[in-house]
Amino acid sequence: DDDPQAKLLTQVQGVIAEYERAKIAERYRRGKLFRSRAGEVLAWRTPYGYRRQPRDAHNPARLEVFEPEAAIVRRIFHDYVHGGHSLREIIRRLAADQVPPPTGRDRLWRPSTLSNLLRNQAYIGRLYVNRTEAVPDPRPGRRSRQVPRPREDWITIAVPAIVDEPTFEAAGRVSRDNSQWSPRRAEPGQWLLRGLVKCGVCQVGVNCHKRRGRDGTP
Image (tube, rainbow, N blue to C red; front, side, top):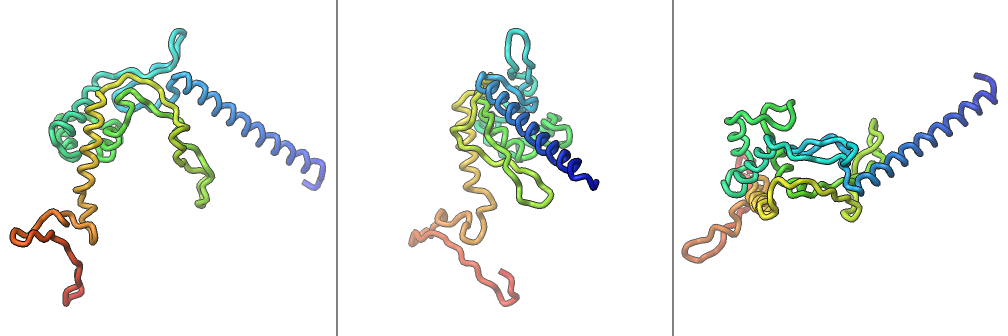
């Protein structure tokens, strides 16, 4: 512990090890980008309705449609777009038919899971990778966090489509319309029926003002 040369050697070894670790990480990242740009699917975590087939002598790693789950995906899109069902109603219908959610940790589907599914462009044949990057996280106890990359840095990989583009775009329109009527908008200044209900005599639109009563409650 008291030998200066031993301390110097330990410090030099630490610097070289850190340099080697950074070089390995950089080579690994470049290799993933090269294979992704060549159309190879690297991540084993695949969207619901697909299965990843590993690379073989004839084809790169790729996604293939898993028909039992793909049928559920088509059903969800149909119920949402053509059936007029809300996300929670779709969850109740899936639970009634005992359709398990994508992860075994949950007994029921979640609204967030369905919402992400309805926005995932992999179902129309476009899988995006390199969408985020790791940056240092200033919060205590955390080393890094993921932040979005610019859209031009995304890499598109062609995969088999499960639904057609008109259905996917219609689901997006339904989501935007439903967000307009979300209960979260029924806050002061965002009243749900503001400007929609009008007086039958003077045609003045309804608006709301928040006041406190004598007991102090709004």
